Every structure is written in C-alpha cells, then in structure tokens.
Image 1 (cartoon, rainbow, N blue to C red):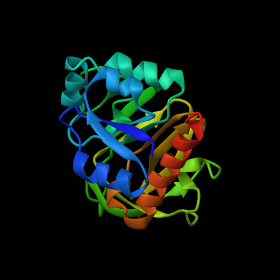
Image 2 (cartoon, rainbow, N blue to C red):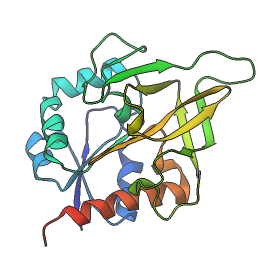
Image 3 (cartoon, rainbow, N blue to C red):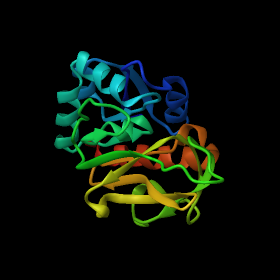
Amino acid sequence: MPVIAVVDYEMGNLHSVCKGLEKAGATPNVTYSPKELQQADAIVLPGVGAFDPAVQHLRSRGLEQPIKEAIASGKPFLGICLGLQILFESSAEGTQPGLGIIKGKVRRFRSEPDITIPHMGWNQLEVTQPKSILWEHLPSDPWVYFVHSYYVDPIDPLIRAATVTHGTQTVTAAIAHENLMAVQFHPEKSSNIGLQILSNFVAQVREKIPA
C-alpha cells in the first residue's frame, strides 16, 4: 500500500483524515519530519483553524521548503481546507505571507441576507474540470461537506477543478494542476463521496509508484 505522509503542524483533524486514507487503501504516516515527507509516496496537508498560526507552525518546523520541493518534484499532493488556503500568497484572515505555491489570495465571504458565515454544512459542487482524477466514479456535481469563512481566489482560473455557490457568491471549491490537488471541503467528513475522492487520490499515487 502506498505510504502517504500526513503533515502534522498542530492544525489538522489528523485522526479522521488518516482513517479516510486507510479506508481508501493507503498507509498514512503522521509526521513533521522533512525526511519522511521526502520518503513518502505522496503528501496530504490537512488543516483546521486560522491562517497565520498555520503558516507560522509550518515554518517553525522547517516544513515550507520540503513541501515546495515535494510539489516541484511531481509527488502527488493533496491539501484539505486550510491546507488549500496556505498554498496561496496571502489571506484576508491574517498578515503572514502564505507559501505562495499558487498565485492568488484568500478572501472572506461577503455578508448577505439569509446566509450564514461560516459556510457550514453540505453543498453541491459545480465541477469545472470534469476530467480531473478527483471526480472519477462520482455523480456529476456531487454534494460535499464544508466549514469555512474564507475561500481561495486563484489568479489562473484554469486551475479551478470545482466551484461552490453560497448565497450569490460562487467561489473556488477545489483546484487541480498536474500533481497538485487541494479542496476547500472536507472529504473525510463527506461520507461515500469523500471516500471516493480520497480513493481517487490514492489510485493516482499507486500509478506513480515504480513497479
């Protein structure tokens, strides 16, 4: 089974992510060791909480450069929730620079009558990259589980793999570009749909492991 490093920087819902990866057929390894990130077949960057503490924890553990090198090397990479947002250059939530792996900013939902912030609960994806491996074996425009007040706004619209609409605001819900994938929703909380998304990621990891 492929070994997937789950990055531990004190900001993630690690237990449920690991359970999801195990069900998807992988061996999760919770770690903050740059060497173990390098040795793993793939990397998952989960995240729950605020932007500034997240990037500060990553940098204090010396993980920024290993993550950038892993993505540049072509290693499969999946960011989840805050793990998507910190890939960007900056966030309206804080003052710290993000990792800057993806050009663009993290913005806050505008207040509107009749919507709640955070955007919390089940909502339907609008898939914009139907051929992305993320969506294989799924119904069109599946329902997934969100908890967020901020959303990513990439400069390059072509990396958007799906959007979601909250009130009148349609925002990026997932990105995919080559080996880099990241989602704003929580696949580990999204029932069978989420498990299939994790299984799709694990299947891509298997394909990259030399025979």
